Amino acid sequence: MALFIVRHEHKADLCPAADPYRGAALLSHLSQPYARRHGMEIRGKAVVQGEHTLYLIIESADEACVRRFMEPLAAAGSLDIHPASTCAGVVAGGGCAAPGLLTDTETVDPETACEDAVEAGLLVHRVHPLNCETSVPELIGGVVVPNARFYVRNHFPIPLLNPATWRLNVGGLVERPQRFNLDDLHHMPSQTLVVTLECAGNGRSLLHPPVEGEQWRLGAVSTAEWTGVPLVEVLDRAGPAGRARTVVLRGADGGDVPGRTAPLRFERSLSLDEARDSDALLAYAMNGEALPRHHGFPLRVVVPGWYAVASVKWLTEIEVIDTDFAGFFQADRYFYEWPREGRTTREPVALQQVRALITEPVADSDIPTGELTVRGVAWSGASPIARVEVSVGLGTWQPARLVGERRRHSWQWWELLTRVDVPGATTVRARATDLAGRTQPEQPVWNRLGYGINPVQEVAFRVR
Ligand SMILES: Nc1nc2c(c(=O)[nH]1)N[C@H]1C(S)=C(S)[C@@H](COP(=O)(O)O)O[C@H]1N2
Ligand SMILES: [Mo]
Image (cartoon, rainbow, N blue to C red; front, side, top):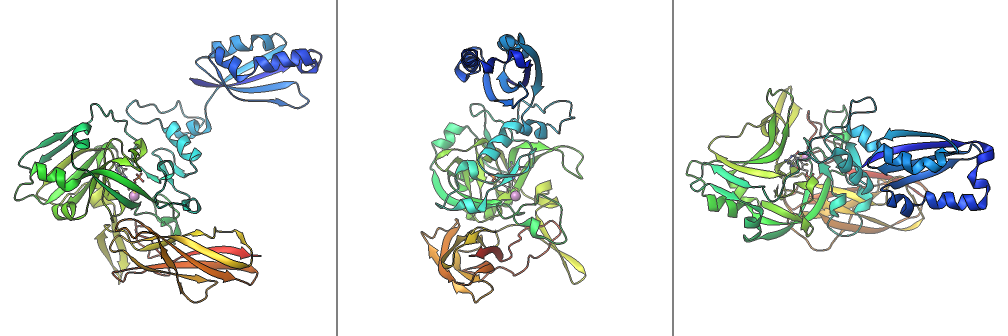
């Protein structure tokens, strides 16, 4: 189906709307059911007041069809039909002047992917590849984030994999190379875990001076219930050889990256010990539904507690090797690089830093004097949350109550009931500490690639 904008103008003395009978006939002609019978969808219609000019937005297989449908009106005046595109389509295709929309049969249409994300209320940072964050105030409710509102982080176009022909190959230094289809995996012992995924770049936009990369605010984090086969189960079937050291996880997506001459696939690695001890899951379901395309359909890795770069989507290969892995997303990105005492120190990005997010009150809102509920979520990759403290208007830190079940790999809700009695502008801050004693810094700790940014969050609001 293609989109058209139709413009029709008629002379004042021929205006059909002036006559109640002809006006009614016109309305039926332009009704959705009538248009559908002609194989068209009317997406919008409006008249420019006082100018006898009508605009229609029509979806149709071709222009001839639209022209035929508009014949009765054309007889009374002019008719212009412009081939059109959705706004998302133009942006995804590289702008109004681009030669044509990107089409690649093996990837998800960027236009649809982007439109779905916008409709679901996600904040889109980049259309191609699709990158969007979840809206923090909308987290109010359950522990899990609905699939359509889960943040999306992609480095390449989203691959469209056919579940009937898709395979997972397990090879390299293993005693029994394996090849699984989706059905095989569905019949293996399964596990369901509630896991919070957070992008290592979450909060990057807080850095001064700014650093390159997606300018995430605080919403590149979400929680879901994942179901799949434990990674150990699959590794055990293959039997890593004695000198095996590293497990490489390879996705179906790929492309060019800076500093490398040939296009490459999205790949990440875990040491064999990490792969065994991390509770990593090969997930085929998310919140009880088949894994959505954006999130790795038909199979993705979920490594609990780790920054989500480890959770490879669209998984097609597991390769066991006896060296460290030097892939682009392992060696050239996803490490902390801090300037310290005149030297730079480096450390790979691994477990999520401890962090609390405030979902209530909403930034810039007006709150009546009296009782105030401060709410949010908190998590840490290294260890469960020990406590969350809240400070209103730069006052003392008060302990918040941890709400609901404590789950090892999921964020935890917290809340504090307090009072605000003085009208005016004020702020609220929240600070989480985990059982390992890690807590959040007052200011973001700058590093060159902008990872693991977890300063105490401050939300400004007004008391009235
Ligand atoms: N194959 C593949 N897996 C991937 C990525 C990717 O670009 N390709 N991005 C990673 C990063 S950086 C993050 S933060 C998470 C995002 O997962 P989500 O889109 O399901 O939220 O996927 C990870 N797995
Ligand atoms: Mo990420």
